[in-house]
Image (cartoon, rainbow over all chains, first blue to last red):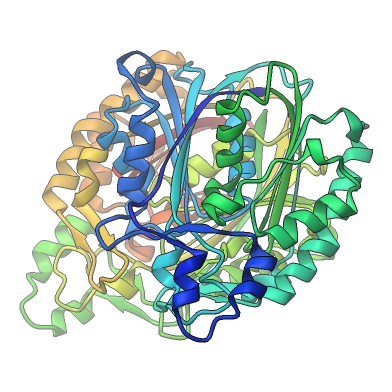
Length: 310
Length: 310
């Protein structure tokens, strides 16, 4: 089994905040914050915007009369649905006018969710509907659960949706995955169902990430005999400048192997990695057979990596 | 790829209600209700019981020092987590002392969720951790969102958790799946995140089920040339007596091909089908190679079926 990314579309809330907005607020060490995060612009959903209508918007940009019929599965990745039930993948089947004979699930995962969804998608080559196309729709609106004085979260998180149209193949020679979980850190990035203000222990999450993820990636490359010099791009979850730079430094990557866009989108959770892929496509930075490594990590704590050929 | 169910364990809240409790309440047409639902006993979680501790309880009954190390994945199916994030599959990795190199996801699905989880599990034969065992943990506490006067929901829904220990094989000759979604019915069984009382349009859900599911199963058996007479058991989501009886009648099943346990457990959502399997195992009603068809349907609206050999 293997996966080919056909195209990626995105949608963002209308409103955004820049680092200048924080300068106007009280009690923020703006320069220190910006130095660590590197994030200039963050999208903030209004009360009328949620993961459902953002997802409809991103998906409608990719679907047309022709490809809609070929969709055999829909994986919806989010932690911020306005509903407990039903699954939004079911609602989206209707709103996007998709066939009824699809495999549709909601996956409640955060920063590593896209890699998990890619693995599930690439494993679905035996669906009885025989359709080889599928959608991975990611959407999160963490900012709904961040109050204005939440110092660790407000400068980081941003709302977005992405839709990835994929095709599955029987051949997976070149696609490798690895996953990991450490529930000991489950309270370090946390939101109970009746809370309106999420908690993040930034320093602890940073220490976990910088201890665990570079080693994890070194082990992954060694296990599958991947020559790091031949990897065109390393696409990391866009946690922040501090995290992304330090992972790249620890892995001794060349500057031309790194592509970041946290500056203009912030940390969009599940949409973070597809937004990198989308920018790579639009800027014509990837061509067929380029080797890509993408790694998601964070809330859970949970992490996942994929190596594939574009 | 194929799946073998090794064992199933369950846990229930301490408190329960029987049909007699409804008799003592005001305004209930108890005889009419019981005639339609057939449900005598329903488990009601207390404020101290949630899907997390119920799941720890059901999982600890199946895990031991030996099999714990062989677990390569964990699929957690629920719509009633006390957290928005992190995923409870991550929390369970820690609480159950499972290895860190596992594939762990939360799937937000209801009555069809177990069949979807079986399909995902059976597709995971290529995990890089090479471990062939996995857990499907289901848990729901719908009763937390049903007030005492909710006529359509209170007599039906019940809280439970089940843990299924599965093994994956490369051979899947005998395992067949089919899935379906109709988001047009998404508001017929609905709970928004800020509501404390769920809504079910019972008649509409019943009409959908009795129109859609028997035809879906007829099509499934025809497509995969399954001789219905040779199916040992048809295991339906335990929605209610009315639903289960009418599906069986429409499919012209023999009485000995049907196994129901809604009477003593109620409708436990995601745990409904594994609770049937568990009873079949305990009552020694299934032996190796028996053909089983299991079908989940409901909230979404979403449905799924699997045919496999025990």
